[in-house]
Amino acid sequence: MYKIITKRQLNPDVYLFEIEAEAISKKVQPGQFIILRVDDFGERVPLTIADHNETKGTVTIIVQAIGSSTIKLSKLNEGDCITDIVGPLGKPTEFEGAKRVCVVGGGVGTAIAYPSAKYLFNHEIKVDMIAGFRNTEMIILEDEMQAIATNCKIMTDDGSNGNKGFVTDALKQMMEEVDYDLVIAIGPIPMMRAICDCTLTKQIKTIVSLNPIMIDGTGMCGGCRVTVDGKTKFACVDGPDFDGHLVDFTNLVERNKMYKEEEGHKCRLTKEAK
Ligand code: FES
Image (cartoon, rainbow, N blue to C red; front, side, top):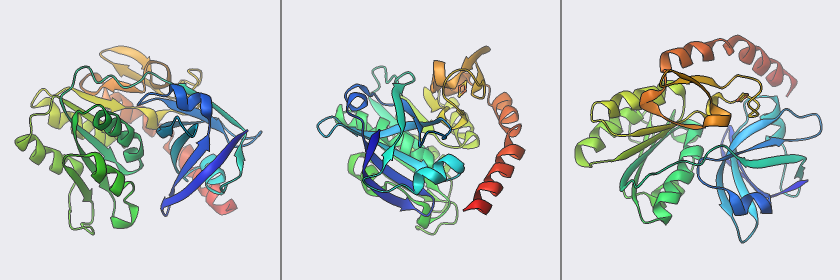
Protein backbone atom coordinates (compact mmCIF):
# COMPACT_ATOMS: atom_id res chain seq x y z
CA MET A 1 0.00 0.00 0.00
CA TYR A 2 1.24 3.49 -0.86
CA LYS A 3 0.20 6.33 1.44
CA ILE A 4 -0.84 9.76 0.13
CA ILE A 5 1.20 12.38 2.00
CA THR A 6 -0.04 15.51 0.24
CA LYS A 7 -3.03 16.28 -1.97
CA ARG A 8 -3.52 19.61 -3.74
CA GLN A 9 -6.17 20.62 -6.24
CA LEU A 10 -4.40 22.58 -9.00
CA ASN A 11 -7.44 23.49 -11.09
CA PRO A 12 -11.07 22.29 -11.31
CA ASP A 13 -10.02 18.96 -12.90
CA VAL A 14 -6.38 18.44 -11.94
CA TYR A 15 -4.95 17.12 -8.67
CA LEU A 16 -1.42 16.72 -7.34
CA PHE A 17 -0.61 13.76 -5.10
CA GLU A 18 2.65 13.23 -3.22
CA ILE A 19 2.83 9.53 -2.37
CA GLU A 20 5.19 7.46 -0.23
CA ALA A 21 7.14 5.23 -2.64
CA GLU A 22 10.71 5.10 -1.35
CA ALA A 23 12.25 2.62 -3.81
CA ILE A 24 10.84 4.48 -6.83
CA SER A 25 11.96 7.87 -5.49
CA LYS A 26 15.57 6.66 -5.43
CA LYS A 27 15.64 5.44 -9.03
CA VAL A 28 13.39 7.72 -11.06
CA GLN A 29 14.75 9.81 -13.93
CA PRO A 30 12.98 12.51 -15.99
CA GLY A 31 10.41 11.21 -18.46
CA GLN A 32 9.74 7.96 -16.60
CA PHE A 33 6.31 6.86 -15.43
CA ILE A 34 4.56 4.64 -12.90
CA ILE A 35 1.54 2.40 -13.30
CA LEU A 36 -0.93 2.53 -10.45
CA ARG A 37 -4.10 0.72 -9.44
CA VAL A 38 -6.25 2.72 -7.08
CA ASP A 39 -7.77 -0.42 -5.52
CA ASP A 40 -8.06 -4.17 -6.14
CA PHE A 41 -10.63 -3.60 -8.88
CA GLY A 42 -8.91 -0.61 -10.49
CA GLU A 43 -7.58 -0.33 -14.04
CA ARG A 44 -3.85 0.08 -14.56
CA VAL A 45 -3.19 3.79 -15.08
CA PRO A 46 0.20 4.96 -16.45
CA LEU A 47 1.20 8.37 -15.08
CA THR A 48 4.43 10.31 -15.55
CA ILE A 49 6.29 11.11 -12.35
CA ALA A 50 6.09 14.89 -12.00
CA ASP A 51 8.55 15.19 -9.12
CA HIS A 52 10.26 13.14 -6.43
CA ASN A 53 11.96 13.60 -3.09
CA GLU A 54 14.62 11.03 -2.23
CA THR A 55 14.96 12.26 1.35
CA LYS A 56 11.24 11.93 2.08
CA GLY A 57 10.96 8.81 -0.10
CA THR A 58 8.07 10.25 -2.11
CA VAL A 59 6.99 10.65 -5.71
CA THR A 60 4.57 13.25 -7.03
CA ILE A 61 2.00 12.63 -9.73
CA ILE A 62 -0.42 15.07 -11.33
CA VAL A 63 -3.72 13.64 -12.48
CA GLN A 64 -6.58 14.93 -14.58
CA ALA A 65 -9.84 13.47 -13.27
CA ILE A 66 -11.25 12.45 -16.62
CA GLY A 67 -12.10 8.71 -16.52
CA SER A 68 -13.45 6.30 -13.91
CA SER A 69 -10.04 5.45 -12.35
CA THR A 70 -8.70 9.01 -12.27
CA ILE A 71 -12.00 10.27 -10.82
CA LYS A 72 -11.76 7.55 -8.13
CA LEU A 73 -8.17 8.62 -7.45
CA SER A 74 -9.16 12.29 -7.25
CA LYS A 75 -11.53 11.44 -4.38
CA LEU A 76 -8.76 10.00 -2.18
CA ASN A 77 -7.34 12.22 0.56
CA GLU A 78 -4.15 12.65 2.56
CA GLY A 79 -3.63 9.53 4.69
CA ASP A 80 -5.48 7.26 2.26
CA CYS A 81 -3.55 4.51 0.46
CA ILE A 82 -3.21 3.42 -3.17
CA THR A 83 -3.16 -0.36 -3.64
CA ASP A 84 -0.40 -0.82 -6.26
CA ILE A 85 2.33 1.29 -7.78
CA VAL A 86 4.92 -0.13 -10.18
CA GLY A 87 7.88 1.79 -11.54
CA PRO A 88 9.83 3.66 -12.59
CA LEU A 89 9.06 2.53 -16.15
CA GLY A 90 9.92 3.78 -19.62
CA LYS A 91 13.14 5.17 -21.00
CA PRO A 92 14.43 8.37 -19.38
CA THR A 93 14.50 11.54 -21.48
CA GLU A 94 17.87 11.90 -23.26
CA PHE A 95 19.17 15.46 -23.16
CA GLU A 96 22.38 14.62 -25.08
CA GLY A 97 24.60 17.58 -24.31
CA ALA A 98 21.90 20.19 -24.86
CA LYS A 99 22.97 23.68 -23.81
CA ARG A 100 19.90 25.85 -24.45
CA VAL A 101 16.52 24.21 -24.18
CA CYS A 102 12.89 25.24 -24.50
CA VAL A 103 10.30 23.02 -22.78
CA VAL A 104 6.70 23.37 -24.00
CA GLY A 105 3.67 22.01 -22.13
CA GLY A 106 0.05 21.95 -23.21
CA GLY A 107 -2.69 21.70 -20.55
CA VAL A 108 -2.08 18.87 -18.12
CA GLY A 109 0.92 17.87 -20.31
CA THR A 110 2.68 20.71 -18.48
CA ALA A 111 2.89 18.36 -15.49
CA ILE A 112 4.92 15.94 -17.61
CA ALA A 113 7.03 18.71 -19.17
CA TYR A 114 7.93 20.41 -15.88
CA PRO A 115 10.20 17.62 -14.47
CA SER A 116 12.41 17.75 -17.57
CA ALA A 117 12.76 21.51 -17.19
CA LYS A 118 13.53 21.12 -13.50
CA TYR A 119 16.15 18.45 -14.21
CA LEU A 120 17.87 20.76 -16.73
CA PHE A 121 17.77 23.69 -14.29
CA ASN A 122 19.28 21.51 -11.55
CA HIS A 123 22.09 20.56 -13.97
CA GLU A 124 22.80 24.24 -14.74
CA ILE A 125 21.41 24.09 -18.28
CA LYS A 126 19.49 27.21 -19.29
CA VAL A 127 15.87 26.34 -19.90
CA ASP A 128 12.87 28.37 -21.05
CA MET A 129 9.31 27.23 -20.54
CA ILE A 130 6.15 27.84 -22.54
CA ALA A 131 2.82 26.48 -21.32
CA GLY A 132 -0.64 26.78 -22.82
CA PHE A 133 -4.06 26.49 -21.17
CA ARG A 134 -7.70 27.15 -22.06
CA ASN A 135 -8.00 30.01 -19.56
CA THR A 136 -6.51 31.40 -16.33
CA GLU A 137 -8.52 29.01 -14.15
CA MET A 138 -6.85 26.00 -15.81
CA ILE A 139 -3.24 27.17 -15.29
CA ILE A 140 -1.13 24.78 -13.20
CA LEU A 141 2.43 24.92 -11.79
CA GLU A 142 2.92 28.61 -12.64
CA ASP A 143 5.12 29.38 -9.60
CA GLU A 144 7.16 26.20 -10.11
CA MET A 145 7.82 27.05 -13.78
CA GLN A 146 8.69 30.68 -13.02
CA ALA A 147 11.20 29.50 -10.39
CA ILE A 148 13.32 27.45 -12.79
CA ALA A 149 12.86 29.00 -16.25
CA THR A 150 15.09 31.75 -17.62
CA ASN A 151 12.05 32.91 -19.62
CA CYS A 152 8.57 31.60 -18.87
CA LYS A 153 5.56 32.33 -21.07
CA ILE A 154 2.07 31.19 -20.12
CA MET A 155 -0.44 31.43 -22.96
CA THR A 156 -4.23 31.11 -22.77
CA ASP A 157 -6.69 30.42 -25.59
CA ASP A 158 -9.05 33.16 -24.36
CA GLY A 159 -6.38 35.65 -23.26
CA SER A 160 -7.80 35.77 -19.72
CA ASN A 161 -4.25 35.93 -18.25
CA GLY A 162 -3.28 38.77 -20.61
CA ASN A 163 -1.37 36.46 -23.01
CA LYS A 164 -3.79 35.34 -25.72
CA GLY A 165 -2.43 32.84 -28.20
CA PHE A 166 -1.07 29.36 -28.73
CA VAL A 167 2.19 27.90 -27.50
CA THR A 168 3.39 27.88 -31.11
CA ASP A 169 2.97 31.69 -31.27
CA ALA A 170 5.20 32.04 -28.21
CA LEU A 171 7.73 29.50 -29.51
CA LYS A 172 8.05 31.23 -32.91
CA GLN A 173 8.77 34.51 -31.14
CA MET A 174 11.26 32.97 -28.71
CA MET A 175 13.06 31.10 -31.53
CA GLU A 176 13.76 34.54 -33.06
CA GLU A 177 15.47 35.62 -29.86
CA VAL A 178 17.20 32.46 -28.61
CA ASP A 179 19.22 29.76 -30.39
CA TYR A 180 17.78 26.58 -28.94
CA ASP A 181 19.52 23.27 -29.57
CA LEU A 182 16.65 21.23 -28.09
CA VAL A 183 12.89 21.66 -27.75
CA ILE A 184 10.79 19.29 -25.62
CA ALA A 185 7.02 19.31 -26.29
CA ILE A 186 4.42 17.49 -24.21
CA GLY A 187 0.68 17.90 -24.54
CA PRO A 188 -2.18 17.09 -26.91
CA ILE A 189 -1.12 15.41 -30.15
CA PRO A 190 -2.09 18.36 -32.43
CA MET A 191 -0.02 20.67 -30.22
CA MET A 192 3.06 18.41 -30.36
CA ARG A 193 2.65 18.12 -34.12
CA ALA A 194 2.43 21.92 -34.51
CA ILE A 195 5.55 22.40 -32.36
CA CYS A 196 7.45 19.88 -34.52
CA ASP A 197 6.39 21.79 -37.65
CA CYS A 198 7.77 25.02 -36.13
CA THR A 199 11.11 23.55 -35.09
CA LEU A 200 11.61 21.66 -38.36
CA THR A 201 12.01 24.98 -40.19
CA LYS A 202 15.09 25.69 -38.04
CA GLN A 203 16.19 22.05 -37.75
CA ILE A 204 16.01 22.16 -33.93
CA LYS A 205 15.98 18.69 -32.40
CA THR A 206 12.56 18.13 -30.84
CA ILE A 207 11.51 15.47 -28.34
CA VAL A 208 7.84 14.65 -27.87
CA SER A 209 6.40 12.50 -25.08
CA LEU A 210 3.71 10.09 -26.23
CA ASN A 211 2.62 9.29 -22.67
CA PRO A 212 -0.88 10.70 -23.43
CA ILE A 213 -1.61 7.83 -25.85
CA MET A 214 -0.78 5.06 -23.37
CA ILE A 215 -3.60 2.90 -22.04
CA ASP A 216 -2.32 0.13 -19.74
CA GLY A 217 1.43 0.83 -20.04
CA THR A 218 2.38 -2.85 -20.26
CA GLY A 219 3.30 -3.31 -23.93
CA MET A 220 0.40 -5.75 -24.37
CA CYS A 221 -2.73 -3.76 -25.32
CA GLY A 222 -1.18 -2.19 -28.43
CA GLY A 223 -3.01 1.10 -27.79
CA CYS A 224 0.19 3.13 -27.84
CA ARG A 225 1.46 1.82 -31.20
CA VAL A 226 3.08 4.53 -33.27
CA THR A 227 5.20 4.71 -36.42
CA VAL A 228 8.57 6.37 -35.87
CA ASP A 229 11.03 6.71 -38.75
CA GLY A 230 8.99 4.09 -40.64
CA LYS A 231 9.21 1.53 -37.83
CA THR A 232 6.50 0.35 -35.46
CA LYS A 233 7.12 1.39 -31.86
CA PHE A 234 5.19 1.23 -28.60
CA ALA A 235 5.21 4.37 -26.46
CA CYS A 236 5.21 2.45 -23.17
CA VAL A 237 8.11 0.15 -24.12
CA ASP A 238 10.23 2.10 -26.63
CA GLY A 239 9.37 5.57 -25.27
CA PRO A 240 7.53 7.49 -24.06
CA ASP A 241 9.94 10.02 -25.64
CA PHE A 242 10.60 10.06 -29.38
CA ASP A 243 12.25 12.34 -31.91
CA GLY A 244 9.19 14.38 -32.93
CA HIS A 245 10.45 14.94 -36.47
CA LEU A 246 10.39 11.17 -37.05
CA VAL A 247 6.90 10.51 -35.64
CA ASP A 248 4.16 9.81 -38.20
CA PHE A 249 1.60 12.22 -36.74
CA THR A 250 -0.93 11.68 -39.56
CA ASN A 251 -1.15 7.99 -38.67
CA LEU A 252 -1.16 8.77 -34.94
CA VAL A 253 -4.09 11.20 -35.24
CA GLU A 254 -6.09 8.65 -37.27
CA ARG A 255 -5.41 5.84 -34.76
CA ASN A 256 -6.36 8.06 -31.84
CA LYS A 257 -9.74 8.86 -33.42
CA MET A 258 -10.60 5.13 -33.25
CA TYR A 259 -11.09 5.31 -29.46
CA LYS A 260 -12.99 8.62 -29.35
CA GLU A 261 -16.50 7.13 -29.37
CA GLU A 262 -15.77 4.58 -26.61
CA GLU A 263 -13.94 7.19 -24.52
CA GLY A 264 -16.85 9.64 -24.85
CA HIS A 265 -19.33 6.90 -23.88
CA LYS A 266 -17.26 5.85 -20.85
CA CYS A 267 -16.82 9.48 -19.72
CA ARG A 268 -20.56 10.09 -19.96
CA LEU A 269 -21.26 6.97 -17.87
CA THR A 270 -18.65 7.97 -15.30
CA LYS A 271 -20.03 11.51 -14.98
CA GLU A 272 -23.57 10.18 -14.64
CA ALA A 273 -22.39 7.87 -11.84
CA LYS A 274 -20.66 10.72 -9.92
FE1 FES B 1 -0.66 -0.74 -23.95
FE2 FES B 1 1.61 0.49 -24.61
S1 FES B 1 -0.01 1.24 -23.40
S2 FES B 1 0.90 -1.43 -25.28
